[in-house]
Structures are given as C-alpha cells and as structure tokens.
Image 1: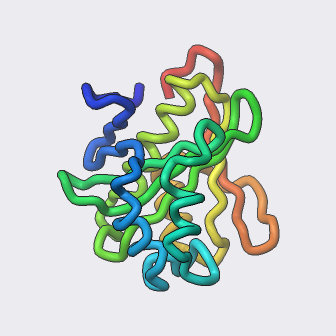
Image 2: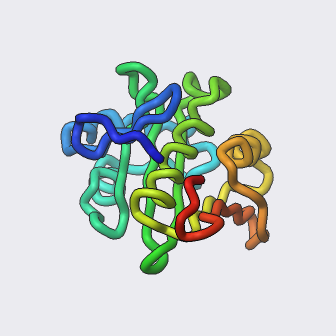
Length: 168
C-alpha cells in the first residue's frame, strides 16, 4: 500500500515523498515551468506565472491533484493525477534536471500509482510520455507501467490493478 505520512495527503516512496501543492509553491513552480530545460518534454513553450497558477497550484481540484516531489527536503519535481472516469485516470510527472537519473521518477510514479490503485481503488492508471523520450519510458516501465498504444507523439502506458483485492 502507498504509505501516507502523518502529514495530511503526503505519499511516501522509498526515496521520495509527494506532498500536495500549496499556494506558497507558486514561485517554485513558476520558475520550473518557465524554464525550457525543465519542460523539454512537457510543453512546447515556457508558461507564464498566471498559467502556472491556473494549472498547477491545485486550483483544478478535485479533477486534478497536484504534488511536489521531494528528495529529503529538496523539491525535485512535480506530479499530478487526473480523473478519466470513476475508477481510472492518468499521472503526469516531471523532474527538474538535477533530479533526473537518480531513480526519483520511478519511485514517485510507483508511490502515486500505488495510492491510486490501492487507496482510491482505481483499476487503471495511465501515463503518456513522448514516444521519443527513452529516459521517461524507462522510468515508467521501472514503476510497473507497460506500453499499450501510441497516439501521435504520445506513447500510452498503463498500470492496472489485477483484481479488486490486489495488493499491487
């Protein structure tokens, strides 16, 4: 089961924690999403502070839940999940360049997927990395996702709960 800490809504992996985004995270996220090196496979152009506030500061709850990925106390990335029905939806995850290649991505993806499949009783979780982003695809695979289709530039990957009582 995804471990939730004593801090409300914080999810724990082996190396990282995911804590819900708060308004005070706007400066951090505006810096990240305004940096072309951060969003290299996420968006075509950097986002303005106003766009970041509207999309990533938790203002789309409950349809989209947003998290800061922490390695120790250091913020290293952003994750979100979104609903695509009553018992399924998707995960998006991006790490800042200094947090990449350390295992944080697969650990964060696994912690979030376990939370969705076990705690929220979802049956299916998807991710849609750019099909040419080999590093991201490997990270999703390490987190238990498998390739199921390709739509345009996006590779559709999924992780399923094998049965209602699964402890995946």
